[in-house]
Image 1 (cartoon, helix red, strand yellow):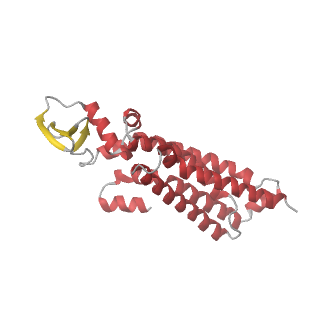
Image 2: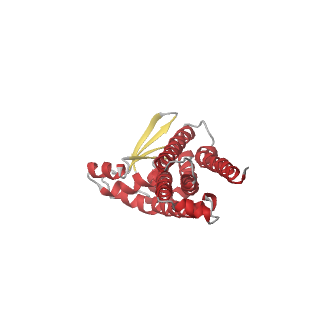
Image 3: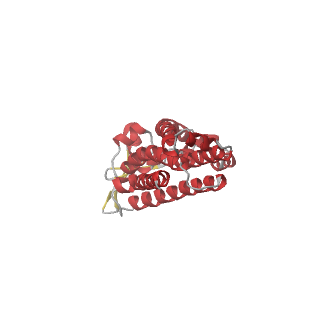
Length: 247
């Protein structure tokens, strides 16, 4: 809803996919938490447990739905988001960085650099669309298509590729976390699930920034938040199982 409001105020509903997709893990946690709170308030969860279906078992369904949502988000980010961005008048960057210099996309003028000093300025005889797309993917990886990211090099492009895959896993894990009985009261359950999702989103953002600055390797920066969520899920599952089977 917040992303939709921003898009409406900006006058372009096409920006909604690019705003929503990075928030999918948070939305999965909130959705599962609200569903669990609703079923807890009506006594359905208690009835399921009386039938021998613990939250750990029924949470597999939340995991499957979360993975499905994450997979759809991965496809949307790789296919629809670039199309949505292309409809914007400012979607194509004015300059793109190529090997040894920069190229102005409006007229193909190339500026050659050596040791951060301009050594030559020339007008290109023709623009290579493929080279421009690859350079744009390195420069703006968050809005690049999946095909352009696969062919792009550099830390930002590699980090974006890994982060999109990690987000799929995070959607499933956070949905399962949101479904587990993290609190006794239904209203508290929904609030805790939202807090877990917000915490994951913040941790993922911090790790990605650290990766872009070269402080963390790409693998750790991209998959770190998803791995922490999986470890938290394992800890909560062990706690819930111990509480169920204990004396």
